[in-house]
Length: 126
Image (cartoon, rainbow, N blue to C red):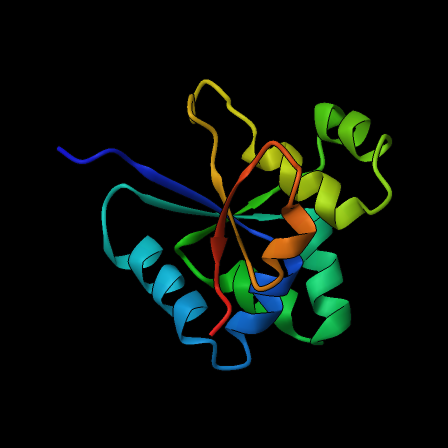
């Protein structure tokens, strides 16, 4: 049995999914079609993606392979300490949890923004 794959989409990956980015589309397909693939959309990043590309939030929230992560109290506390809500909620979502003991990988089209942060990154730059 293979290890589960947990991936968090940042707002750049979410916006890219709607512009024909093949790598983002493949992630969405795998999360829908293959067991053990989990794709997460933090609510704050979803808002920013929708601001960049209107309609993104509604589209991604309707996809069966994507789990939208609510802004709960621990996430609020993490967001309060960061400059941007989207990045903070994404980073918080990628941290280890009982369901994701190794945390999650952040999928992004701007990997340089995560440099120096304690996260693993999947570059979706075509």
